[in-house]
Length: 521
Image 1 (cartoon, rainbow, N blue to C red):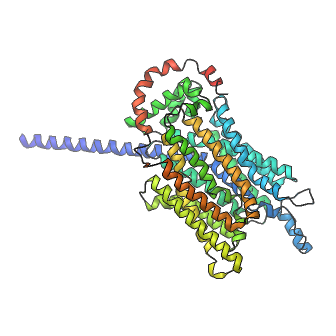
Image 2: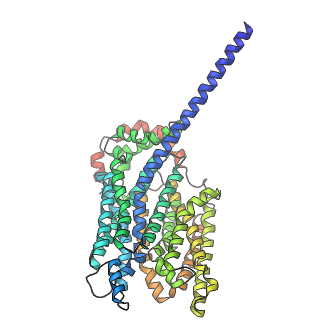
Image 3: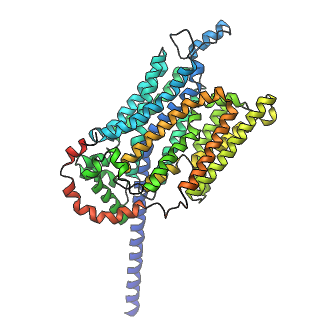
């Protein structure tokens, strides 16, 4: 009897362990499924970032296709006629017109970021993104088949409006899907897709037929439009319109079932229902900052991010490499640099370098400054001695190091700090303000680059970037002393601590959302 009891007890233990292992395996599969649903949603939404990337790189080679070179044979003129963008004017575009076409989208995006926030609770994420995709398609049509400077201006303006919508709404939309375990992965998808759009535009410019290049650029906003027809509406907007059950069902598709994730999800749902989160104005969001000692310097750091010159250079990449000379043609040098931009973050993640963000940003700033100083010296030597084959790889090497360090540092860390330091009440409006500031700074830089190239030369342009980066490193040391995770208030812990208090008051605060939403405008 004793042996039979032992056998029965052993079999029960084996069945219990097997059941436990099966449940753990099923839970892992569920977590994996939720993760890949979130990744799928993010990839579809990130097609907007690809479209914006193509918009940024459009001006790199477009102006070279606008006019026929009258010094070539008639046969070559006819071939150029088939490859160029047709203009009604007989005169070439002035330098100011070219700069205006390049910079107009940034100004339009800066204004749109504020307008999007003010109108958000009347329109919602899905309708805004469908409108952004439509505007981008219309922009590509005008840029492809337009016949005057004004057609191109309207096309670029529409592209800027679409960019402002995408950069204002896609990050918070993706953040709704992102559980804490894989939020950084989804954010990196957005950064890579933006760089991918630049690379695609530069590569499509090599295609002789302009219309075919335009088809490639238009494919991504078309896919974005189709994709958002099937993506769910933002849970934030659903809560603001008192569709809480729909919002909860949307979030459950991408959030795990563990207690912490459910607690954070329910807390977010409670926040988004409260009138004080819906009705907050942009001015009040800055005035009520609870972590202003970090948020305000971070907003200034976002301005530094644009004045480092990495993104402004993408508007004129081919022209800049025409002036630097080098082993490869300007078009291919630009493509190689854009390719490095695309693979920088995946390579950094695969390397598994556990460097704190503060040290990464500080050291990357100094190394970027060194790369720009070296490239400026190369251009200075080239200007004195003429072309030299011995230094043909320096432009690609220095620019590659510069864009790699920018991708892993300045491109993502300031926005990460901003997200981590903002409380739930101010996160959406302050990020809209930051987006507007970023695009406005980009507009100033894009307008300045041709002027600097004309008056001080390409070498001094790189040395000016070096000075900006050194000031950026100094600003980090002064404004962010001992910056680490212990300084930034953890949003996760704050959400968990406040979930118990907000859940009891959520029903009382959601009774008057309609009039509250009007106060935003």
